[in-house]
Image 1 (tube, protein in one colour):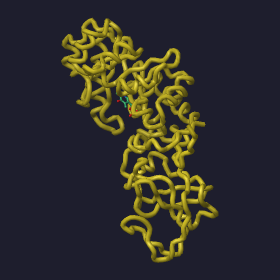
Image 2 (tube, protein in one colour):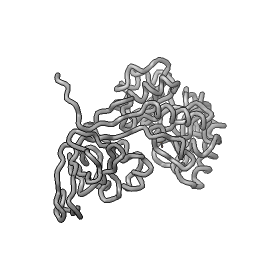
Image 3 (cartoon, protein in one colour):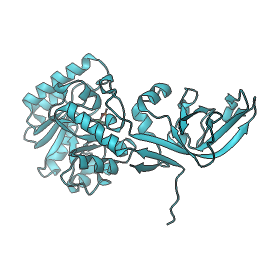
Image 4 (cartoon, helix red, strand yellow):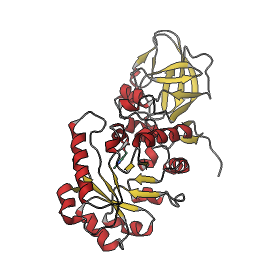
Length: 348
Ligand SMILES: *Cc1c(COP(=O)(O)O)cnc(C)c1O
């Protein structure tokens, strides 16, 4: 097969990833795992796992069995859990792979009792989010008796806000810990780690903050950017004052302008809501404001004040997650997981 270079790339900073994990681990004061579902939030789950396992991370979480199967074989000493538990069609994978299910309902517990051959499992109990997990009354009412539980989990619904729900979920989880035997207990995601050591228990499960997201103000200044999307200039063109650029002619040149047309569009996850919000790209410290409507595979920047930028140059997108989220109205999670398959992932 011939090697075809992609005109879009994600530069991924493994040192920043590891530094973020170390900071989260130090804040946790407990074992610190990693959520690597959705292909490591778009970065590539296998690479994320390799870098974090080398740094000492031992507990990883994916959403589905297909995601787990794609990560085989696991690095030495690493544990992997599947957050969505076991449906009827998952039992072959669940019995075959060296991976634990996170059981989420009385039905899943029964399925695991019947076919899990006594192997250990994780269990999710819902303490107020009402998404996945056994209800507290089910968990306390004997549904889990005799099960070999490695990690008992619950998940915070509002940890990124100063909500009363955080303390309520914490109290409910503390009560569960008194009543249900498990080897370890785990409540906090990235934002939960920022709520303080009370929330950490034995194991924390950060996701977004590993990848450069700032879940709460407490993390500001500690979390480093990991993902740097770059796109290559396909063509330079001159646009005369009064001419317009792109679909719908939404941008009009106020002066004779140099325009850089680059290889990226909404099909790559760079959605139309980025337009008109003041963002853009940089080339050698020159700012290139994004102009006009974003096309499927193409995007235009005003390069009038960007020096000698030309065809083939790589433009670095403004993609600091907190500010890109504030500008676009997308969440930091959507900004990462939307980045498409056409980006070549390049780790340094
Ligand atoms: C996704 C997920 C996490 C990680 O959450 P972040 O907000 O990305 O830190 C932790 N636990 C569960 C159950 C999850 O689904």
